[in-house]
Image 1: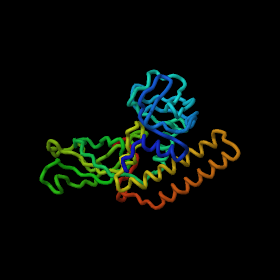
Image 2: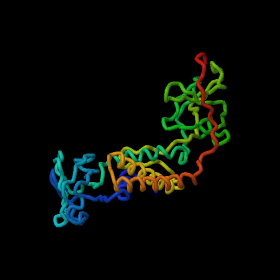
Image 3: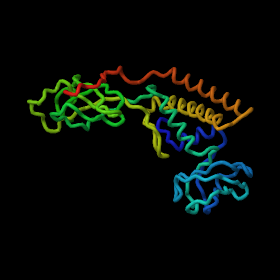
Image 4: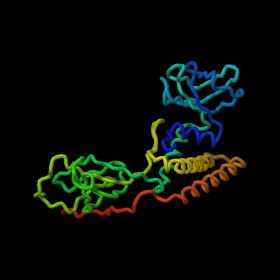
Length: 289
């Protein structure tokens, strides 16, 4: 559940937003897709929907469905695809262009804020005589730091806790790790293979490719995905009104938007961040340091 992919989330949200289906083509042309095992819906069901090819020679391409026929299990497409649809090509049929769902899902992930931060460990930074080090690109908060040689015999397990550090803004959006207690210049020889071990918190991954996952552990996965689905649906219904939907349709979208927002907030309100209390101090260092 925690490793739900973007393709799976898009289909789940699309089915709840409106009608949607997915499958694997058995044949096709540049203007049609045939799925004898899946497209059993009544005539015209998928007219004015959008076909997204998730694999094959047209992977990543989207086309408007102009009609669908139950007897031939066929979708008619316009404009023509660059390549003919072939058996085995994966597809999704969605009520909106796929990018609307992708954007709503990623916005929902961003709105999860600190609720589903994950704790990670990095042991790739080599300790030198420098005081400043680059942090992992996904690092939001440094929780703990150790110095040691992986596999060595010093306690604990080759790592010695180090508290003389802070994170500061080296430039806009580029935080750096500063070891303030290291003597300049360092007079104590540094053993070969000495590393910095960072324990840090990171936000769930934004999803770009169809198989991408958020990187949330299984314990948090179910409630995180529920929140993301509800928040994404809230955003999609709000967007429907912004696209000049009027009358009863607008009222229906507004009601659904509020209902999904209430559910998302309820899920988030019951979640406590799963990481330890923040230990990083962030500040801008004077230029002479």
